[in-house]
Image (cartoon, rainbow, N blue to C red; front, side):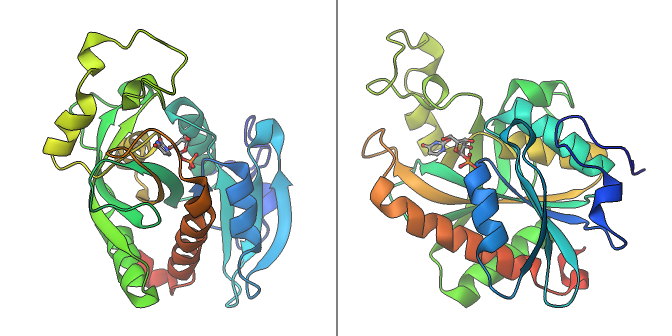
Length: 266
Ligand SMILES: O=P(O)(O)O[C@H]1O[C@H](CO)[C@@H](O)[C@H]1O
Ligand SMILES: O=c1cc[nH]c(=O)[nH]1
């Protein structure tokens, strides 16, 4: 089911997407990244800015073969993502690749590399409104494989594994020194070490809910994140390495978006 009406939060509807509406969206937490995606490749035409409502910038792009895709913004965290994804589904989006940033939990997952999520440990309240906590938060295997193949082809350092998706950047990711909250709950003390031992690669704040929505609604979702912090070393984001890591994530996502449509489906 699609819907022609302008959707309340994303600020556009199917009628704004032209005669051959997109089915694939690249989804960033940060509206500035959504813009960078829209303008990164000179062969990809920025057809129009669809909306900037609530800072949720969305762009309609045309690939060299004429196919259209979206670059859209989820905002930070699962509640905002859940609204945007619900409305993107209503206007016909059936494949979503999250292009995000993350903090590494493993020494070998270096700042500047990319993490491609095969599944998420979903510690997110919004997801519990959509499916039971036990419901799997799994990435689409076909889209995910394309991301891995593209990273290999482009020579971008990458890791494939399980991502921890949580609701908070400070408390939930056991940030103590840089947090304004001096009272970290007992159950969160040692959570980073526990996740490290479970082999979880990284922290971010949207993939788990996105994956559960994909399973319940019936669309394909994948996630790649640029590693911008190393939580074994500290709490800070490595601002000097962030731009390059993000640029690699964008290059990778656009490479996959440009693949023939049949290569993206299962
Ligand atoms: O860079 P984005 O896509 O926003 O992703 C990460 O960055 C934000 C926190 O800094 C959270 O949204 C987290 O998931
Ligand atoms: O450490 C980090 C960096 C980016 N995004 C997160 O959620 N955590």
